[in-house]
Image (tube, rainbow, N blue to C red; front, top):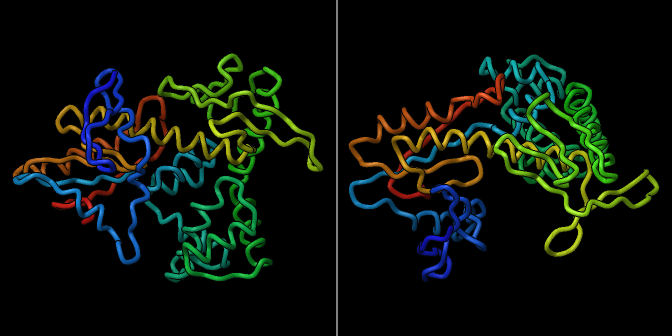
Length: 315
């Protein structure tokens, strides 16, 4: 189904794609997640998105959704429990890294813990983590220290590490036309006939024409994409799956939100609604409540929400 829409990039009529009355995708080029937030033009485009007179924007963000999904899907129960108990998982990780009590973790050390939680969950090596720490936490560490930090993460999250291995085995089986399910039982289903993984939403995460090539480390896998072939491994599959599941969660939550307020746009793990000024407080409470609901198919997944309001999206 195609319906007319005004395009922010080309300033002319284009199309957006909808299925069953729900927005699926509203641009084939621009990515609102990547609008600049730093530099000379920081947030200028975001600030140009303005609520109509008498209305306010509510931006509700699903807190740490990928890290929560990863721990839940892998059965890393200590991390799931920490999220459920509203503990600071970044400080907990930092305490393990630096061998100190959580209460003694500094601001800079917490930043390291946050970067590790968000950056090491998909099987990255120590060199990439070293780069992440410099770029995202502003902390420079030696190669040896980066390797030590990776070792601490993996040894304290062995169920997550096992999930990468299981996903790697899934590729091996899928490439030869067999199914090898992984992760929490009943959440994902590998379907060789569809060349991919059936998600809770009913959509498929596909790895078209998956092929294996002999390498020094065993076999390297790649699948067909629009512009050629894309390398894939266990950690990358876990990343794909976690992001897809996070979107399934937010999609279910958007259905609840839509019962009272129509989502105006979504960006990654956030939902933006445009509501009347006099309804802001009630709407914000309602939207946060909707985005704190765990779908029935995701029992035990700890979800949470943070929100903010403003007349401009850039605010």
